Length: 137
Image (cartoon, rainbow, N blue to C red; front, top):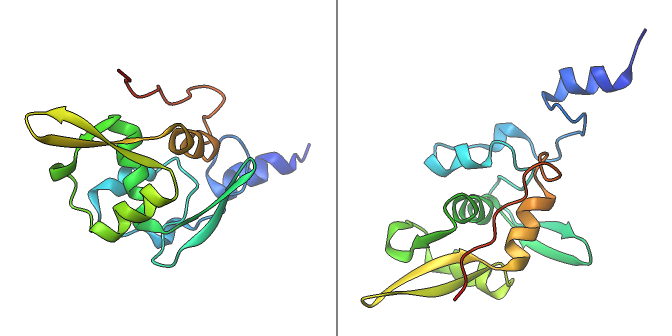
């Protein structure tokens, strides 16, 4: 018997049967790209609108890769990220990341609650494994 969901899984390569919005061909050679494998977020150079509940964010591939890295590692020392200042400022302005004090004059970056919510809502495994909250003092 024909089941259209089987066809969607075969065509899109996704177990949940949802259609992928952002094309895998927009990938580049950035090592953070592997962290985006299961995220359905923009991958290109132009910023696109991304909706999460009642909020809309403007994100491009660089923004998405940065969010994916912070989601994977929870807190990343700022100097360890090779990201331009404009990207960081944009993500701060969008309310998706924040700076935390790591001590010894070192600062780190982490996702805000809104940033974790965005990644959770654009991950096919969002019902199974929500992102762990960042440590808070």
